[in-house]
Each structure stands twice: as structure tokens, then as C-alpha cells.
Image (tube, rainbow, N blue to C red; front, side, top):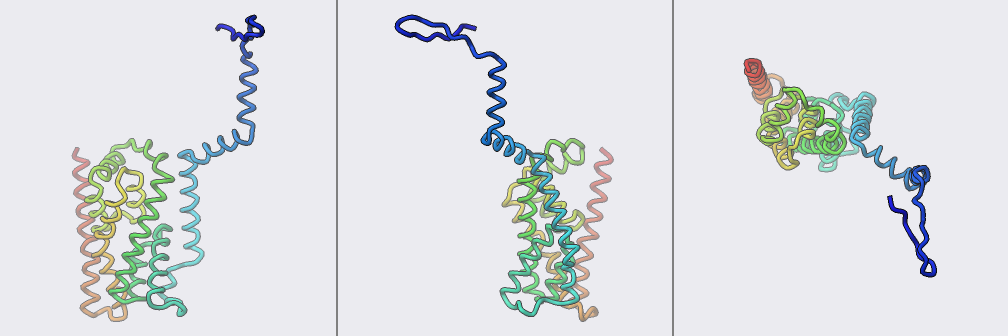
Length: 259
């Protein structure tokens, strides 16, 4: 390596290169400064596995909150009398969405919506909560979990599910919502890890959830009269998609085994 030179009064003076030890010391000093430490901590905190760990902590905290506050008591204790009308519907929709993120089963929430608000308003609040909860879960999974989990999609089943959601997201999510079988939270996070877009996911969730949600809302509203035609029809609409979904899943599994 050529040494650097400086000129003083027309005379060139050789300047020896900095020793390797001094360069290493300078690099360590740069890292040890507050700015260097902050940059290093930021990289660690924003790494894929750190974000995934944060997601798991948030989900565990949400599930613990559900066990502590027991939102299912709405079915037995009723809605707080201080809330009524549109305000109650909005609060219930937000609570519904947060509960789905915390793994509370949607059928229970749909029954509560029908019992508290009647068939029509109960359907509206339940659908709003469904889309809100799905959007929150999708956003959390996409921001905090996708980068860490996508490299793990190596098995045939996971690759097939990822490819289906990435290429045919709207159609696949519509089927998942219309025919219960895949848990609501599992479909949300699988879609988040895939390359499915926001708009197809939310639109398919809203449209595909209408029949099943309406059936549960009607059943909740007519629960006091279990022999009424409306209640019996609602129960039929609840049982039929579940049966069709089970048959489709069995045939799909049989087909994959054959290949």
C-alpha cells in the first residue's frame, strides 16, 4: 500500500498509514459511543425474531386478559346499563374485535351480539367486530411475524397453503370464512405470513362471514324460544356449513395423500 504524502514548503513528507490496531480501536470506540449503541440496539429490536417475540408476548397478554376479565359473562350478566344505542354498538364492535385477537371463539361473540342487540343490529355489530379483529390480527402478523416465519415455510403443507393464499387469496379466504373449519385466528395469521394483500383479505372476510354470523346472531336473539322456526332455521344454517366444510376438508386431504 502506498503511503499518503503531504506537502510543506514544497517538500513532500510521507505519512505512514494508520496501524490496523488503531483502526480496530476506532471502530470499537464508534460502537461504544451513545450513537453507535443506539443504532446497534435499534437493529436488534427491529430484527425479525425480536418482532416475532413481541408478537408472541402481545398474544399471550391478550389471552391472559381474556381469562382474567371473562368477556363471556356478557351472555349471563348482560350489557352494562350505562351504555345503550349507537354507543353500545360501537363499544361492542371494538370489544368484539379485540376479543377475536385474544382467541375468544367468534360463535360465542356472535351469540352475544344477537342476544344483546337483536338480529339486525347484532349482525351489524358482529360483522364490524369481525373485520376489525381480522384487520388487527393481519396487521400484527404482517409487521411482527412475516419476516421471521416466511423462511420456515419448507414443508409441503405449508408451501401449499402459502401458495394458495398468495396466488388466490380472495377465493381461498372466502372459502375459509364460509365453511368453518380453520380457526378464525389461524386464518388471519396464515394470511398475514403469506403475500396476500390487505384489500382482498378484508373484503373476503367481510363477505364470507355474513352467512355464519347472521345465523349465530339470529340464534342468539331467539335463544329464549328454542322451538321457534327462526331459531331452528338458524341452527340449520350453522350446522350445514360446518358439515360441508368437514366433507371438503376430508376430500382435500384424501386427494393430497393420493399425490
